[in-house]
Amino acid sequence: MQKYIYKYAMITGGCAIIALAINCFYLQQHFLNGGISGLAMILYYLLGWPIGTVSFILNLPLFYFAYRYLSKTFLIDTIFGTAVFSLILDLTSFLADKIYVKDPLLSCIAGGVMFGVGSAMMYKVDGSSGGTDIIGFIVYKYYSISVSTTEFIINGVIMTFCAFLFGLEPVLYSMIIVYLSFRLTNVLMDGFDYKKNFMIITNQPEQIADAIMTEVGRGVTFLNGEGAYTHQSRKVLFVVVRLTQVNKIEHIIKQFDPDAFVIMQDAANVFGRGFTLPDKVIDAAKEEKNKLLY
Image (cartoon, rainbow, N blue to C red; front, top):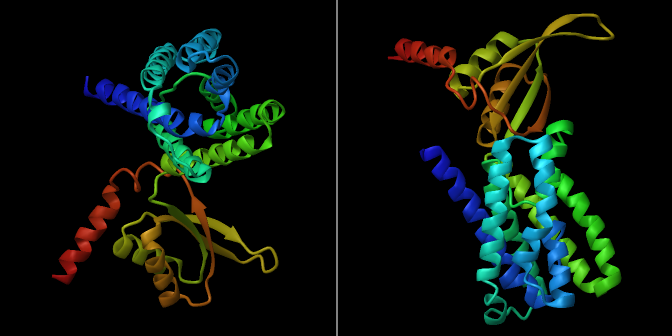
């Protein structure tokens, strides 16, 4: 029960933040949004139709695709998210006349940040506010392309079309918002706790691996490597660490083998035994070392 309460609370919170971003920072500057809500905003600017109601109506055909290509759970979550988003959007529409930020760039930044935070909250629990989110999740399911990337592409196409309707300036600001929300969503989805992976080619693999496991507490994998020129076999160390542990890893490598060849790369979405789950082997090694020291 707690799982579902948390899930729908996150979806509701994300929808509320996005709705507030639109009413507080988008409408006053005539900014635009991508996707279904963007189309609803176009009709609002041209005809004065309520964005929330129109957005919900335009989402109805997409519910079929959610049912056809995604799970029933996702469909229920999407209908819930779309209904909540549309309702909050219309209920808070009065804020468009109450809040005014003179500088369009500040509105642009604030709107993009809020939109990114709201989107990340929903995506964290596989929620959706409908619209192009449905297309994004279908693409992610079959092609492993992130939801935010798909939305960024679709929104770019919509923004290009809107430039012919409303002029270039509001569209340029809107594209900045789309980019900000896209980048922030990805950062929040991956987390601020960045990870790095190391590939270490060394003449002291055992010593370095033991030091990493006991001093840093990270698992190490030995890969079998062979030099193309020398045909000499050697062990290659592979290890993933948190950003705060990078300096310690570099210190260990330089301590045992200053001539080691090291590659360090960004790593995202790391999970499993030895990282997000406790590693019993490493924990046992630490305990054994502590016994020897004390």
